[in-house]
Image (cartoon, rainbow, N blue to C red; front, side, top):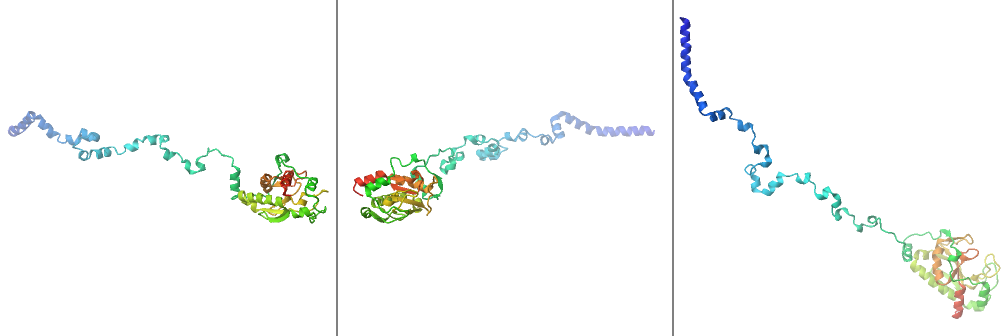
Amino acid sequence: MHFKSLSTTVFGLALLLTPTVVPAFAQEQANPTTSQEEVRPSTQESTPSAEEANPTTSTPESTPTEEANPTTSQEEATPSTSESKPSAEEANPTTSTQEENTPSYDQGEESTPGEEETTPTPEQIETRSSTTQIDYIRLEPTPKKESINQGLTSPSPQYMKAVLGVPGALTENCSPVTNSHLSKLIVTEDVGPFKVRGLKPAVGALKRIFGTVKQKNPELYSQLRTAGMLCVRKVRGGSNFSNHSWGIAIDIKIKQKLDKRGDNKTQRGLKALYPYFHQENFYWGAAFPTEDSMHFEASKQLIAKWKREGRI
């Protein structure tokens, strides 16, 4: 009795519930799309769109700044283009402009290491000598005899006696001129770096020589001194008159220092002085049998010229 009553009650409850469940199920079958949307309401949120997956292909609506400024948008879209793709000059530095990578040859010698060196001219040497300190008393080998005094010879004592006579007494040291004719031809004058006493035409030649030296080599000129010109005496170590006896020879000192006779060495300053004397036809004592580089004298050719001109 009780079992029947319970079954009846359960069956009745089932009938009451059936109208509600069945219409809902029937409604889902009639509209499957609506049901799919309700079942998967977050499908769009969980699956990114093609635009979101690839932002570089977004439509104009997703990038409103492109419409406002297309050029700016393009630059912003590819901000690292210049960095990731170097320019032609950066990729190949050898093709850069000459102004940036080619040294200017106006920068001085270091910019032109391949520039060919040239031998300085005598004028350039003379110019440099005025600004560069040169050791003119430094000893150097005496030039070979055949390389100097070309076309000139030393006047012998016999020749000088024939032209001007015996000058005075033959002594070891200096003695006075006793020849009246010669005495009239002796003068004392300033020749530039110092005063001398000698034969008048020889003194005039010294003025020209030292004037040229002063102009072309003032440093050498400032160091020139003399050990004397006129001196009636014997040749050192000889038995005849020295050419100093007629006042046609002069001994030169550099910085008050005499060049040693007979050592076959010559002060650099005397070497530098020789061309000026040679130009005036003076004979250089560096070519004597016993070297005497400090000694310069009027050559035999010059004495003969003065004689022809009536100057002596």
